[in-house]
Length: 397
Ligand code: ATP
Ligand code: MG
Image (cartoon, rainbow, N blue to C red; front, side, top):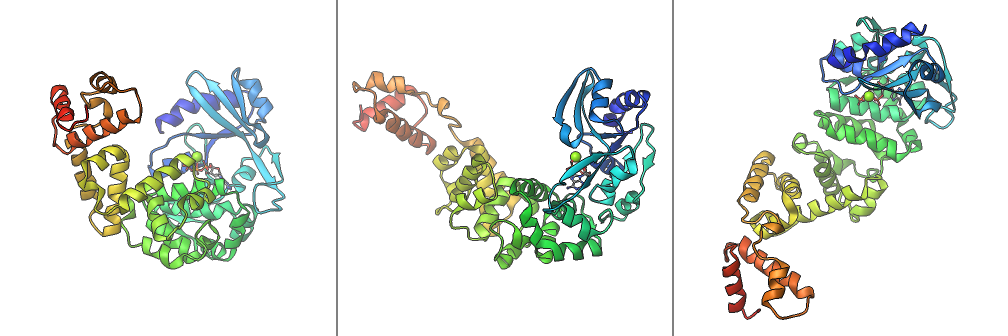
């Protein structure tokens, strides 16, 4: 068993000793069977949140209304969720009520896909009433029960199906796909914040092109922010080397290919954090610059290494050049910069104030930028005396 499971076995044992059941469930069991790395384990138990709190001295109520308690043990923290069923999905999202139950099978039945509905006990035995392991080995994503009903209970599951395609390179079961195709409009009932989490996982997945292709084929794209009339533009993405691109780079490419007029408004609709929006705006601006920003030491310096690399990759995609090569070149250019940060400059504002008998003002910043530019362009050496003489020669001091 994986280290993470082994470390958590004493937690299951304590719950069992108190007379309840406890299992590993969800993504960790799925990834373990697939031999993929596991980041965290989820534990499900027949004990109610109150009962869990009676077993462990230190807990935190992180989602107690859904049955989740955080156990804080010496070996780490563990999320323990009470077996539950859900009912009354009147608005295609989240249940109206959650009922705690004592049956593991009922808990597994409320889960989205068969591969996510496998439980494992402390000895590694699998409890798999919906044949999740078979579907995992056949690389099939298939809802637990009728897909139409399951998508109507919670339309986010449609996005989840596609993000699992992107992460795992699985196929959608035909009936599950047909239902996804039929039920696209109900995704509009889901909060964008929840859709964004799944869409960003889709964008981060190794098989994103395949997932995006299914997003288009199923028609689901039409009900996502900004995408409604964009089929042709979005299809162009499928021919790009998307696997080389990370989140902000992908958002940049998406904005460019969908001809977003107002990038900020478009990304705000997607509920992206403002920091990311600003970064995407800068990347796009740099990537589209003519002559190319990569030719200017000053522009590479001003962009900083991270955004310079991102913009160079986006530019490579736009111009049909090799992304990896573009990335290598820009790293090299950055490493060759004579100055990598402002503090590398041998002259400071204090020096300028000493040399030039003027009151402090905007001129200090302007002078520093002039010096910076000359040094970066190798027109001036980064040495204090030389810089002073250069300023004198230019009649600036
Ligand atoms: P990841 O590795 O990305 O965390 P995961 O499968 O663990 O993938 P989570 O969102 O962490 O995904 O959810 C944990 C488990 O909860 C899932 O494996 C699934 O059993 C169940 N689950 C999550 N979201 C839903 C949903 N919308 N409907 C039904 N079951 C869900
Ligand atoms: Mg998880």
